[in-house]
Image 1 (spheres, rainbow, N blue to C red):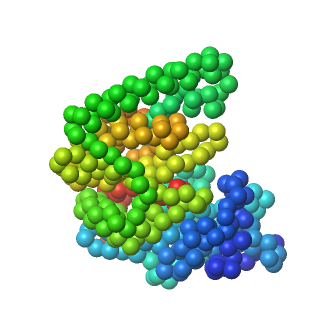
Image 2 (spheres, rainbow, N blue to C red):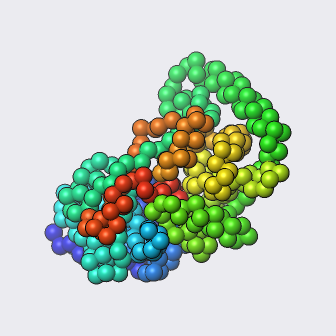
Image 3 (tube, one colour):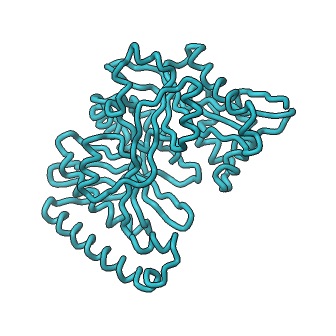
Length: 356
């Protein structure tokens, strides 16, 4: 078998999208995906495609390039995502060759770090075998906001199908009343709008200040607008903004995700000033009521910040069966930055991830 790996360019968009469509069982618009993949600009993204026997693309992997702030220093990093190989070729050298091409970017000193959050245990074990190092796992938290509709999407249970709608309506009514009482008590007003440049500088400033205690992306205004420009399916990222008489409470960055027969509100990030943490629970209550009006049956959040995670659990978010293992390469970067070895020193939410 003749294996060839090469760096992709804009002319390879059909190869890249074709492989992602097979992986996701979706149909993607080429122009939208071109924008999502930053027009293959080498300063923003690197994509490697694997071919066998000439022109047949059978696998790919990507690095999303970004600045990471650690110990008041900025280092160059590549966030690893979208590794995919056609099942027929997974036992070949294609997997190893693709990963080694990605790792070469570090060896050539173009970046300081490769990191990623990986869900599948077999992929985690494979990458550890190739030199990656695990620093810990991150849970995905979930809250069912239309629980009976959610359950009936997966299980055909007769009494749930009959009683599900009225029971979900009762739950919604309770949440709406509770949200209204909170609005009056704390004078909370909310609005939901697409992420835009008018408020992006405020978001990036708050994020940079909040993230200064952690190892985190350096959230410049340019990077924030680029990260939240467009989703794979062409829908827009949105921000649910909460205000009170004392000013801004916080902003929930989110998107709607359709998966199987369910609709989920994915919280990409929650942006808030340090002294407003306690009020975020009230903003979440308002967001739950709003999400039900958007036909969402659940809300999910990647629990990559300890204090916020505690608050989410007090708001009755629970651990889902899904968790992500965080991997870094090379391991010897820990000699220079030993605090990287503790996942609690990082801040990692869905906004840092490539999946959504």
